[in-house]
Image (cartoon, rainbow, N blue to C red; front, side, top):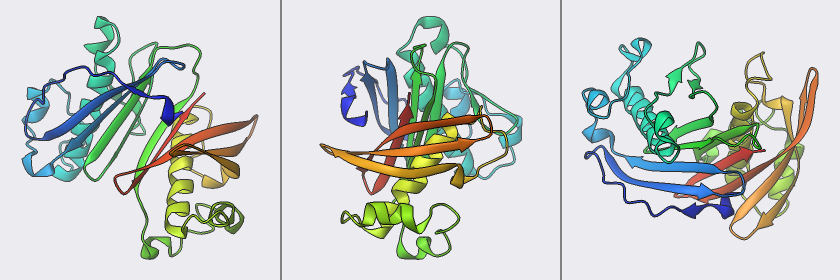
Length: 243
């Protein structure tokens, strides 16, 4: 799916120095808008929330500026993505739920992610899409791998990717990010917290510059197979679920 996005080429002036670059993409089959921005924490100021007309939740007032800057960048991409939809929706806030999950406007399915200096948001008004999840992760180091196997993925899952020449670091990041995207997409159906073993990698395929991974979902009263699209972006792994 990530290969099907096209650049909207909408001229979006940068609002301040905090937002360094931004882009709006569109995937026509799913009627899915994807907003991207690169932000610079050096220029973060809490007053930017008012400047960008983005609500800073009370529970984030005591958070460190790093966390606040990530939240602001994520909500800014949500604002950009929603701006591509009809006027009423683009004026609405993406609220925060009791588990700190983003709550999108009515009749909109959306998902957010951020990592280091990158934030992204995908939204769709289409009733043809029931689940959307997105995640971006920096590629793991050898140190990061210590203690992850068995908690995030099995040795069999990792071997599916490494047997095709993918390094352990990239393979582990792909699986971790894909499961994060899947959890975001199915969070309303899963009510017992994050358990990465609910999603099991069962196969994958290459298509041009992206990878499509197939996961079996096992949950009480809920079973499915989902496809997760993935690609490498600026030393990060980006994954997306939309179905």
